[in-house]
Image 1 (cartoon, rainbow, N blue to C red):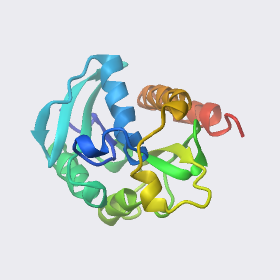
Image 2 (image 1 turned 120 degrees about the vertical axis):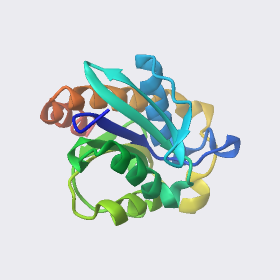
Image 3 (image 1 turned 30 degrees about the vertical axis):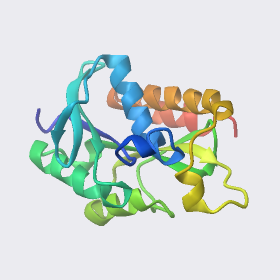
Image 4 (image 1 turned 90 degrees about the horizontal axis):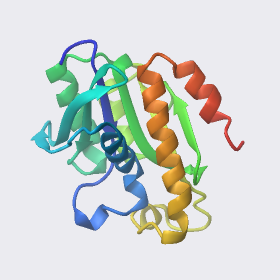
Length: 192
């Protein structure tokens, strides 16, 4: 691995208790990406689980931080430093209850909003532009935010979530192939 590689991180919480919860949508997207490209995410490193392989001819390291959400940046920065990867070759996928279920949004700057995992990542990366793919899990309605994001994903919501995870995988594939603009035009406007 080296400078021209991509680091793709899916934010979530480790362990069986969190596996099928809304807050793990980013983690689920990177797991889906790994499946699509036959990459095994098994190695324990950088305070997470990691695997490397090739997507569309590009070398990638996939990372699932095992630090719990509010310390995600610690895992990301360790992998980044080890590989000497610059922020513009980092893609972070995470859940967002301000975005409707089934939708994704691609950006390379902005605030973390209320997302503790992204707050942690931004505490390390500061103003460096890096690509974020937000996966919609909303609307929140009148529910308690913490209780909602840590609740199990109901079967009735799976088709829409799976469609968003599929779009997120396609987005990553397009971005690392140099088509970020096209991905943003295709997915940021979808369903709006």
